[in-house]
Length: 118
Image 1 (cartoon, rainbow, N blue to C red):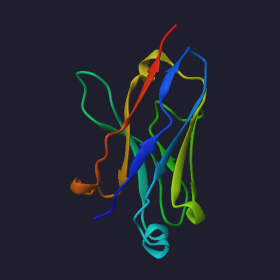
Image 2 (cartoon, rainbow, N blue to C red):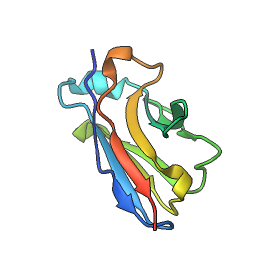
Image 3 (tube, rainbow, N blue to C red):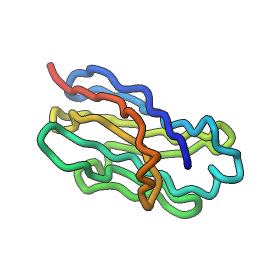
Image 4 (tube, rainbow, N blue to C red):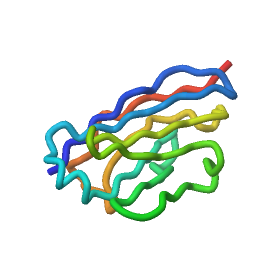
């Protein structure tokens, strides 16, 4: 089981920025390095969707709706994956979660709420 803990959400105005963090506090380093990690989000009344993913090796990939605005990165030494979100829009409002790819059912955390509103 991989425990993942999200943080960094908040209320921001349209056009603003936030940086989310996803930490794996209990994973040993070698395990974390081998994980493909992704950010997912779920807006009210909608299904959970993949936002961005960063594999253990290789290039990151993004949902079309966030390309050019969001950047996913990882710092293996800190066992942390980040999601830098710029030019935020009201439609980015959602609870953001991180998990592995493929998803591990037992790895869902509490998520972090992102609200984009003026």
